[in-house]
Length: 373
Image (cartoon, rainbow, N blue to C red; front, side, top):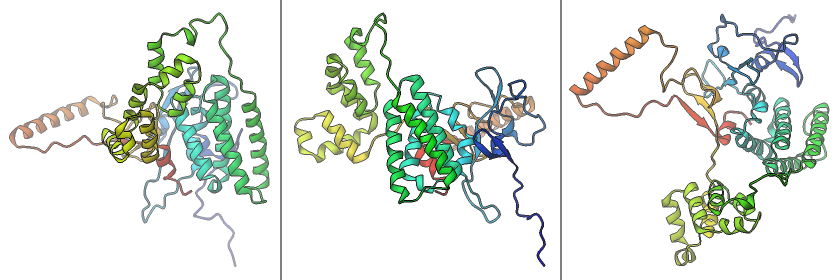
């Protein structure tokens, strides 16, 4: 006779209702939910056993906001079968609010591009909701900042094409979930179609045409993409003249590739050896090696506790500059150990080793490798 009771394998998760739907309590607890009466967050519980839950930061209004972080399973053992959920990880790392940070905008847009073009058909329902939420926040941020309009249109175009390719006469996911996605996609398209770049008023000085040529050249040198340089050259005659200079494209080549790579491509193509056109050299290098991707800020993974976090927030395991929380006794012990090490080095030759790397930066491509997609 079967026994109806609670399964001992049940993880015991509790679910709470949020504005975005039902979420696990341990996941929703990582986000900043203000108190309904006071409108602010309470101080963290000092008796909390998890030291990472004590990480807080100050919000724009001075309130305490939990620091976004997430533990990642980097390997499986016989005792623990690790599994990382993309939707939960995106929520714990607060990707939706991170879109508003100009340092993380390009990183998140690149991640959205990879999810839409490569992983859309394998995403879970929660990950799909997070994807549309991040895309909607990107649309609002582009409307507010009047920048990166081309990135928003590119993401929307890729999403429409992938949805049409994946449907095959049936909807992607459940009916209710697809109706929600359809409504949000229509809302995002409506936002994208109403974006208009506001030109500065007639009283605004100096205008771009009034900027000296030396300043224009420095502005163009800060661009790291050939499309941006060529688009800037279409603004007006002086910008077009500067964007065609050899020094601009030579510096762009040296930024993306090493001197050995540049020399290898030049030696392989005779027309480049005869007349070194740096625009042609750039195009050859781009097709051969691809572009170097740089982001103002990336995600980091701690090697000690397998915790993923944003680089600007920091992490307690990051002690390359010393720990401010160390006690006086611990500092004395460290000083004694340093003195002993110095004495040993004087007595015998010690092989010099690089300092241990406590955390590593994660690119968008590496970020997706931690999930079973």
